[in-house]
Amino acid sequence: MDFDDTPEEASWRSTVRSIIADNREALGRRGAGRGYDDPAARDRQALLYDNGLVGVTWSKEAGGQGGTPMQQAIVDQELSRAEVPGLVNLIGIGMCGPTVIAHGSESQKERYLKRLLRADDLWCQLFSEPGSGSDLAALRTKAVRTDDGTWRISGQKVWTTLAHVSDYGILLTRTDPDVAKHRGLTMFVVDMKAPGVSVRSLRQMSGGSDFNEVFFDDVEISDDERLGDVGNGWGVALTTLMAERMSLGGGGTDIGVGVGAVADHVAARIADLPDDRAAVTRQQFGRAYAESLAIRYTGYRQLSAISRGEMPGPEASAGKLAGTRVARDLADLSVRLLDDDAVFARDSGGDSTWQDSQASLPGLAIAGGTNEVLRNVIGERVLGLPAEPRADKNVPFRETIAVATGGSESAAKGATV
Ligand SMILES: Cc1cc2nc3c(=O)[nH]c(=O)nc-3n(C[C@H](O)[C@H](O)[C@H](O)COP(=O)(O)OP(=O)(O)OC[C@H]3O[C@@H](n4cnc5c(N)ncnc54)[C@H](O)[C@@H]3O)c2cc1C
Image 1 (cartoon, rainbow, N blue to C red):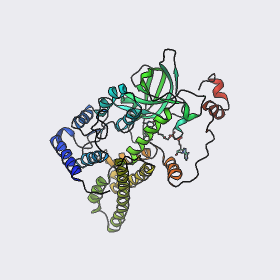
Image 2: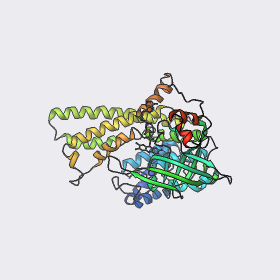
Image 3: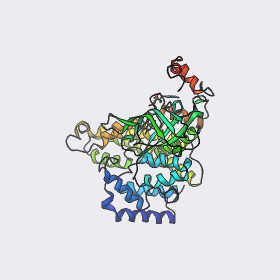
Image 4: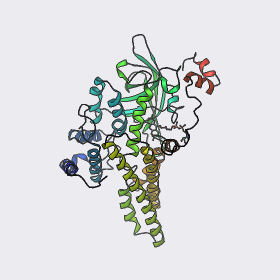
């Protein structure tokens, strides 16, 4: 990959810069609040969309710009450089939208995609359940088809980011417990305001409540809202998970607070440190900086592959794994440099970016695939190590539940899972 812009890329970069300059005030500055619960943040995203800077790689039919991954990367770089606040609906844009594009009907694409990009509607991803996170295909929320063709959904999801403010979600359900666990799943688009959907917030250690438990109590979904074929929910979910890993670990974007912001913070504080501590701090920052560059360039390599029409590979898992670790190192370093302010900055009216970052990064090492599971992916798909034993392969899901619960599950539920 050539790191200099081609003439076309340079011209796109200058277009993006002038759009940002023309709308500088209306676009706001980073740190301007929590985003999704602020109507002004949605207006800012609509402004970016209306100027062609959201959904750059999505086709025009999907409401996007029909641009290249490099054009999207340039937009990301320029928005970041200008300290424009991030988009409010990364889950919608990074995961739900690509899933609707790949598996949705024409009418679903028409109804949903442009509104999603403009942040007219917010979306969430309803996959995890209390008993199925890493082992996602073990989920139990069930969808039963009625005589008139509509579906009835019952069950519970958990850790659903933004469910409390979302208009729609992509919902993975079990439609057939009599086949092996991966084969009996079906995906739907669910209206989060439909009767029978209830959302209960969970409090995080950062103090925020960004994710939720979601309960489905006999919720009715029309068959028009099915995403992909009945029984092909796992294939649809893989599209979402690949998009998720790319948006978290691929493409050369920073995870957590960017290395540039930490560099400014380190530079501002280092002059006050005694010499020995200053030297160690420089070394620590230097190591994290070098690693973050390696991650960024690995991400660019992926972008180049995607630009050539190749599918992203397991490098995205490596990018996410390494990215969360370096982000953690940078946040640790920043908080250590704050000394007493690491505890009191918020109260004294100071900036709590570093503490917030410190408190939210452990979650990123879990969301979108835990570090342990990503290591398994790398072990099996990159290093060619033997696959984990899978005792439930080809076993009907109903039987795996009966084994796990000593048979009580099927008896208690009249053999419905
Ligand atoms: C900030 C945040 C946001 C999230 N947002 C969403 C969301 O919007 N939508 C959604 O559906 N979900 C969301 N999740 C849930 C997330 O996808 C799950 O937490 C994740 O998949 C792990 O599942 P689990 O919590 O059930 O842990 P488990 O799968 O029960 O894992 C427990 C521990 O066992 C380890 N482990 C499990 N299996 C293996 C294995 N095969 N090999 C080695 N170790 C293993 C795990 O690494 C972990 O340390 C979010 C989570 C977080 C933290």
